[in-house]
Amino acid sequence: MSVTRKDVDYIAELARLSFTDEEASRMTDELNSILHYVEKLGELDTEGVLPLSNIHDQKNVLRDDVERPSISNAEALQNAPDRQDRFFKVPKVIG
Image 1 (cartoon, rainbow, N blue to C red):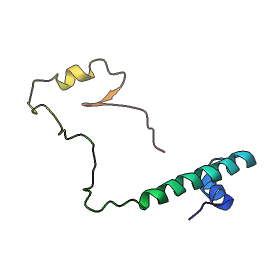
Image 2 (tube, rainbow, N blue to C red; image 1 turned 120 degrees about the vertical axis):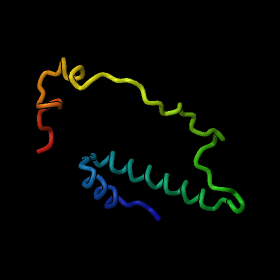
Image 3 (cartoon, rainbow, N blue to C red; image 1 turned 45 degrees about the vertical axis):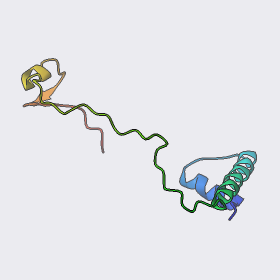
């Protein structure tokens, strides 16, 4: 499998990127180099090798979830620039 200039132009359009001719040519070469390397990795004999998600044999070390006292709703809203009932009021950010 190889990447063509047409592929790079298409991917750039999807990503809303613009490349000069020189950049697109370099990107084509670099992507082909990456694919060639991945194909080489596919030639390795991995029979009997277990899948690995982490090189360390470490488990998540998390503290116990302990309920603790917290500030009241009124205290949380005390310095709020704007509020509505028991909630912080913020400007609309999604159309």
